[in-house]
Amino acid sequence: MKKYECPCGYVYDEAVGDPDNGIAAGTKFEDLPDDWTCPTCGLGKDAFTEV
Image (cartoon, rainbow, N blue to C red; front, top):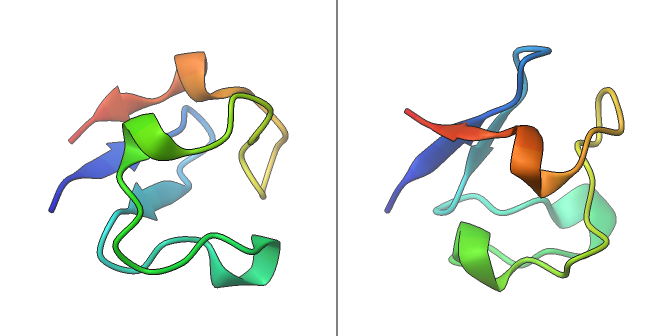
């Protein structure tokens, strides 16, 4: 599974998901809702880069 990093330093790990915001473990980055934002700073998915 892949990881994606926001400029603020938050890393979205597909294996972990974002359980605090209702995103199940195993959810691929491209399958996140279009309105999902970084839980730390609020930037959109387009700000993230694959790491």
